[in-house]
Image (tube, rainbow, N blue to C red):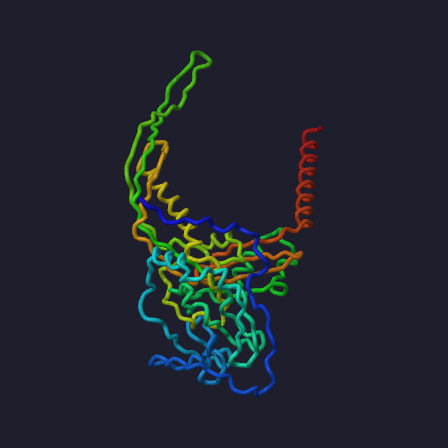
Length: 417
């Protein structure tokens, strides 16, 4: 029996201040710097009402009504112009989000046909804005943002489509609009009574943005042979007189058997710069609603490519699966107690998908330390970190002490003491 390779997961490090953003930017050139040479643009599909303006490494979506830039509007689920409000249908890719063979991907990674993420992301990439001509340097795993000079959505095209990278298979579009996301943040923060007042003014001191983050999802069918012991409890009465008591004892019986498990879309977060434990609490993700990848869903939002590839994330997935297999074995053994001596897991069909999943991210710097709050961009689930106000905690303790003293004095007076 063989098991899937499970490399050691990268060690968790404290999240750095809000992760990858623009490395550097240079101001737009003086007016009329001359035309920017365009690479041959791919023909637009029939029925398209706009032209995807592209060069070798960047992509924008100009509005055919006013020339402004289109972005993916969450409320309408359409491309919408921020200037004139004109909307356009998305050019959605036909078909379903296909699963890919995991073993083939692992062979590509190990053979070097697919570059390790860290090696690829060391490079900086300068992007020229198609609208104003400003130069922006992308670093790390950021692949889409807004131009810092004119707010035009810009995308780095040489990552998701690079032959040495695992392609994006699907995207789960945002469905929680910005207004609702801000309401959820307000509710979450207002429920943190001991947070400093400065933290609660996040709308003036923090960064609130939408971002597509990278995930790998894993599917597997497994067949597991096990052996161990089944424990059935029974009671006996022991002792005499005052020492008479009832004890619970266990009758152990050797067992062996087999179980089957089927796993669908076990999600593993593939980015750095986030608190993984809190991000994990945003699950479950409705991955069955994912659409075939189209860069149009990303227009106007931040986007990250993966920091950890499909092999690096595999150990996290198999750990989750093995936990479920162990639970299945316990149920199969039955009895009051189970002692699993060995499990021989045969990993059969194994597939994966590379998905972009949406989050709203609030980052507040308080006392020189970043605090991040995350919102699932589909379900609205909120989890995050917050600082504590020492002054509020001391005040609360003082109030409690005063109340205790008052109650004690009242009780003493009522008792004549």
